[in-house]
Every structure is written in C-alpha cells, then in structure tokens.
Length: 291
Image (tube, one colour):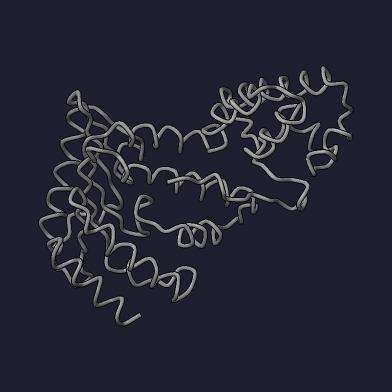
C-alpha cells in the first residue's frame, strides 16, 4: 500500500514539504545528510545558486538549504524535480529508495521490519484498534488527539508509517494474522461517527481475508486473561519469536522462551474467551448498523 502521496506540511506553510529528521536516529541522520550533500554537489556542478534552484522547483531558498544541510527529508517529487533540473540522469531520483524508510521513526521501522518477516502474528488490543487494522483517517484522528500535541508534520509522519506497515496484507503467501479487540475499541467514536463507520467497514473487509482472524472480546465477559493490557507475539520462519506484554518485562520486546511462554499462554486464553471469528464479524456488522 503506497504512502507516497501523503503530504506533511508543517507550520512553515507550503515552503516546508517533507519530513523532520529525528536527531536520535543516527543511521537516519547519516542517510539524510549524505543525500543532502549529493543534491548540493549536483546543484553547484550545474552552476545554480540555492535561490535559483529552489525557485525552479517551486520551493524557497530556505528549504533548499535545509535539505542540503541534512535538516529536512525531501519528498519524492523534490528529488524527481531536482534530478531533471540538474541533469543527474536518475542518480538523485534513485535516492528516493534511501529516504523511503528513514522518514519514519526508528522504532516504527524496526517494528515494520519484524512484521515483514513474521509468518504469524497474534495480538490483543485493549485501548485502540491494532495499527495494522486502522484506516488512515482513524490513525490520523488517534495521533491528532495525543497530548502534549504532536506537530502536524509528526502526525503525518506517524500516519504514513502506520499505513506503510499494512503492506503485510499484500504479501503472498501471507502470514497468519490473529487479532482480538476489546468491544470498547469498536464503539469509541474516535474522529467522529463517520470515521468509525468507515473503520468498521474496513474491519469487515479485512476480516474476510483467508489468513486473517478478527475476534471481539465482549465487555460483559466474567473471565478475562487480558486485564494486564495489550500484548503481541510475532513468530518467524526459523522458529524464533518475539513477544511484548504491556506492563510485563518492562513492556519491552522479549525473546526469552520463559517470557514468551507467558505471553503466548495469555494470548491463547484470550482467543478462547473471545467471540469466534464468525461471531465477531457478525457483531461488527451489527455495530455498523447501529453507528
């Protein structure tokens, strides 16, 4: 699922398209700086001043200096335009691949990499819908209500990263994906009633995929093994696995067999306590009719 069309303008207005550089992401900073140096070298070799270069691309001089100085991640169209302008023969445009990942936060890149390699995923969500199940507008509403508030640039970066992770549904053969969601996550009108309606419709669509199971944990259940919070287990082709349980093991990913057994045990019990996948889709359809 492509995310290249998502804009990320910040408070600076139309002269600031692109993404902020995360100063704590050392590898990302190095990549952005290297790309910036290449853009500057090609511009100077073409005998163009920064103001002239920016004007020809439709951007301001300040943005050109930020990009060349490694302080701003340019959007793909900036690189395409720069390549044509200085006659780089595709060398600058090819750098879009280098920047495709570093524009997302490091932790999300690491998570996306693990999800891309997983052959099985089991997850339980108690507060919000799992990121892989969210629509773009639901994700934007979710990030937009964080406090302290994220900048518009940060919100769009996080939304784009979340949507990019959903390429997991395009894999063939696809991994086995199992989600258990608390009933309340399907009733909360984050972003408004219509956002929720489209989100429920999306869940019904995804739930029809042969490798996906979505289950609902009714609020009225007397027994519930997930009261400790959200959890997830990712399993890989080589037999290894990574798990995470909110509130346990410092909420960090764990691969120790003893810790993994605890998370897997809870996930299994939660699935048994929830509605079956068929019952759950019927329940979601009912909620859609009430929304």
